[in-house]
Length: 374
Length: 48
Image (tube, rainbow over all chains, first blue to last red; front, side, top):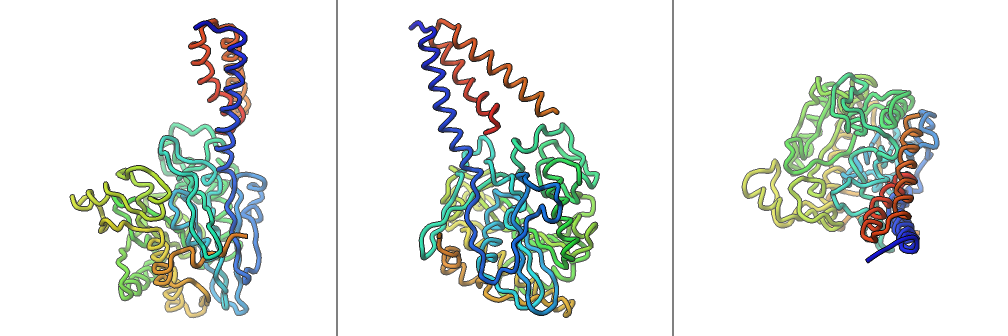
């Protein structure tokens, strides 16, 4: 079959059409899901209010501040450092939509790496979104990438020397949890890290918690990772959780592993620094077909098989580890840490009401505690 | 600066591809060119 100008024109038109539709699909990932804050929200700020270098950049993100009437401690909760770890992000959203602070202050950043929410990992076939049912209808949430969008930060260096001096592979320059304490004039990811450090400093944060998830084959899982300044606090939280029947372990932040939140927040900002991990099959290497139900239900036959072969660091069976269970673990850990902080330092009391109970979340599901879509 | 250089390179290659598609007489080769062109256009517009 021979072609020339006419077929060229036809094919160019086809290319334009494919570009239009696939472009729409990609640009859909830039849309941010709706979050309906609790009526007790005091102020909503942006990360750029703490570091103007982020203004109008894809690294800027919403900061929700809840203030009590009495003075007390200040808690920072970060979700979405890695946007492919949904339990951290959903826990943060759940808190924003429900809590009331009576004493002290709670500051929540659900999308810590906003740019990472705006794309998906290439060749992973992950769904762009997943939906959770609420009594008033279904709500969607973005499933993003571990790393900053390469459209926003390019090119990756061959070797990345992070702000704390650690040598890492080039792609890690887009990993927020390797970029602390950040750089004022660095890569976008380093600027986000710098903005978060500014927030910690300006808001005088006492306890900072970074919510994560790990793959079931990764040793640091169902764990509280703590900076050495928070060792006592982590131990108290561990004991509380074990008494409640939550199986969790402690992991000390290695002093030579630099650039991570639980290391640099403690070293540079002198705040009590904690990172929490739950088990997420949807970003594991052994998973089967990626899907929204894998994110929400956490069931995967490959992981069941791997568990039977003793290859995992957590128990895993046919029931999987659903998102509601992972969010429930995060909520239980947060509650234990806040009460532990009060036990150690009574003047840092943070009194939070209307926090969904971990048992209720596990029984009634996450959607029961999310506000209906408007 | 590096972003501008990158854009200019992608633009140059995109225009070359379009010129190739217009001049090419074999339809299958035109089609191959179009498949590559889609990636370049998305990259040029900083969509993906």
